[in-house]
Image (cartoon, rainbow, N blue to C red; front, side, top):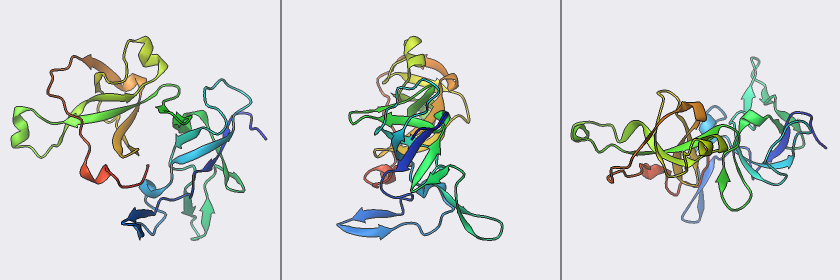
Length: 208
C-alpha cells in the first residue's frame, strides 16, 4: 500500500498528548482539541511515496505538522478528522510536513529544515531586561545537507531572520524549527554562550 506523492503514517501511541506521568500517576493537562500544542506530532512511517526521493524509510519515527493527527469541529459542531486522514488510524503526510526523522539513533532533519537551540541573554542589558534568551541567535541542534555544504554544522552558533522561529519541544529541548534560507550568519563563539531551556520543558513527557 503506497501513495504516489504522500507518506502514510500512523500516530505513535495516541493522537493527543493530554496526559503526563507525575509520581507514577497520570495527570490530565488538557481536555480540548483546540490547542495545537497538545496534538501528537510523533508518527511512525508505514509506507513511503512512489514518486520522489527520500532518505526516510518505513518504520522511521517522524516529527510532523500538528494538523496531521488533529481533530476539529465543523461549522455544525460535528467532530471531524483532518483532511490527512486515510483509514484505520493511518494518515497521508506530504514531504514538507515532516520536520525530523529518527531511525533509532538520532533525529535528522530532511530537505531544508533545521532546528536551533536558543541561548541565554547575557548582555549588559540583561540585568534590566525581562528577555531570557537572545533574539535571533542560537546553536544549530539539527542541521541538513544544504547547511553542511555551506560548512555549517551542528553545534555552530548562528543568526537567523526575525519571525522564522516555530517552537517545538523535542526530547525535553525547546527548539526553533526553520529553513535553510532563514539562517543569516555564522558567529564565532565568545565562550560565554549558554543554551537556554525553560524549566517547564524538562521532564514534561511531551513532544510538540
